[in-house]
Image (tube, rainbow, N blue to C red; front, side):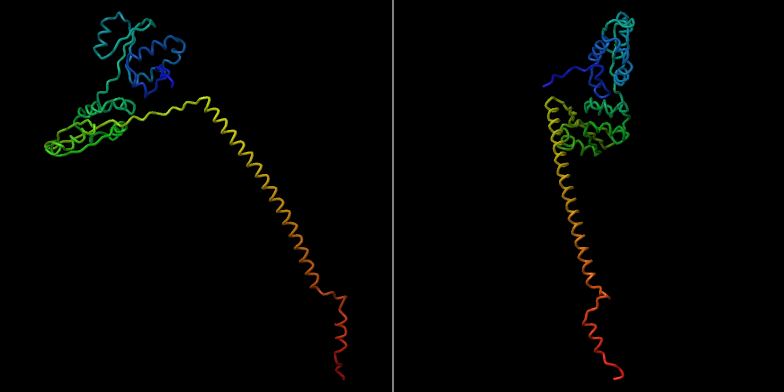
Length: 279
């Protein structure tokens, strides 16, 4: 079994970058900077991916006031080797403060209660008041059920709330006068992408399959040649039979046509037997 390796900046994309912590990202930056030329050539590409999830600021570690200010804003400050006069990096993961911050990438890394909290603070719109695009994003990662009932019906013992909780749903209740909008949410099973491991055995199997196909093609070509030869023989035989038939027909036609120069004697005698009119 292959050992799982840690991600590097080269491995990051706009999906898996959400799984990275600020501490892990700082170590990736340190490791990448050891290859100065490579980091310099690809820094813009790295930052385009990182900045979809993180805010970064390079600074000097001894700038105490700036360090304190950044930490009060939710940044984590990490020491780094000296580069361009800076020896520290401040990293903050983008806070998801409202439903419009949700994307198909970050929704996969949130808990159901976190999403419900965003809905609760979305100006009281509830589930059905969300834009369809936001609903689609949420439903890509969660099962969602929403219903509006009178308060007594919604909250009665053994009612819909109790049943949904038994099914591991998180519940958000939004009051609508004497009615309650209940939003129930639980995560969908995670689907892992299958990665194909091409090994030497697989390559050998591929070679065998290719050889088998080539052999089958050769057999087909040989059989095809035999069939063509048989068809040619049948055509030759048919031509000969047609010629014979044509010859027989010619003979029959010759027998049917009378020869004017060779009238049978019987016919001449029969002419003498015709009575003379004078007699």
